[in-house]
Length: 258
Ligand SMILES: C[S@@+](CC[C@H](N)C(=O)[O-])C[C@H]1O[C@@H](n2cnc3c(N)ncnc32)[C@H](O)[C@@H]1O
Image (cartoon, rainbow, N blue to C red):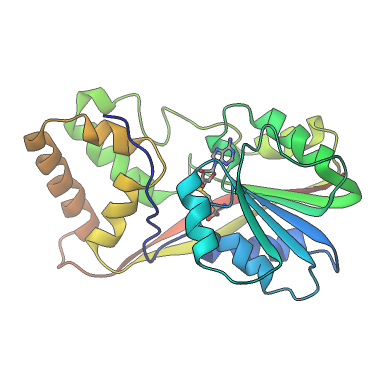
């Protein structure tokens, strides 16, 4: 069965990363910015809190995310559209800031996306990107995928570490910025806490959001799906009743000047 991500953010959405990411990246004092790979808009709306910005473009591959974002705002400065970060539908040097928050590790050719990012930026403007440190910085993913791999042999080559996503290793994002021609490249580690209200809040975005698990889960027979969900639930609960749990989550962030 073909799995397409639905709009499912849960209470532990990436909203928590947008503010520290912008604090590190900086926001221009005027002009037009691009939130590329905007999802349902966690960064777009954090950018919109800056009244000095004249226009905020939001772009995502998934039409349903774009539609959800549009439905959440009446701010005339925000314009959301479907598109590919590897072929940005904008002219050269149109933006005063471009941001890729938790996007590049999903993109088939992230180096091309970075070259596109540089192309649409005015000379001297800032680009910034962040990707999860999925080798050492995502204990919730380890909990999830280690449990699944223990039960399902077919999952051996899936999950956080075996299927290491592009640019998520230490220093990789920084090197990619330099290769794309950015100058003054600086990197940092951003840590947030992902808080979930209960197991459903943890499980639902994992299964129905963007990621490798949805299609894998959909393809399993019903009995194995139930067994898997019960095992992940036991790992999440860690011997206590259902309720809130929190996990530290670490992202690599890099900024550079076009
Ligand atoms: C983890 S979400 C991050 C969303 C948002 N930036 C945030 O931080 O909440 C990754 C987003 O990248 C989008 N995406 C992945 N590949 C893309 C591409 N080639 N072009 C545009 N968007 C893409 C996905 O559709 C998804 O919305």
